[in-house]
Length: 79
Image (cartoon, rainbow, N blue to C red; front, side):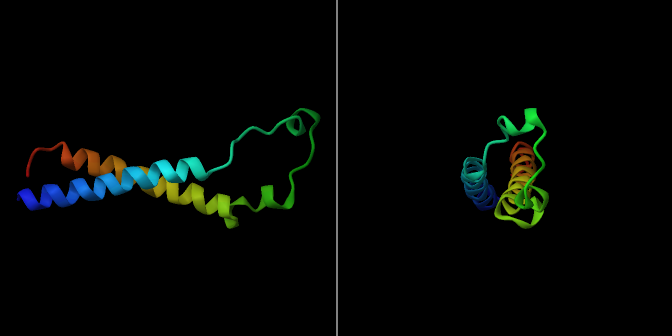
């Protein structure tokens, strides 16, 4: 059972590193002065789910869920 705990810990470390990298790769959410004056969104703003930014957001959500699940499993002290 010790090998399972070691394997889960290694996976947990990789997920932690991936989560940090994914968060740092994302753009800031500051809209600047465009939000004050009411400027319409651009094409990339409307189709964010299909862009690289949308992919990063989805991958960040998956990594965050994996982080929480692995943290809970490793904290059970079953292994």
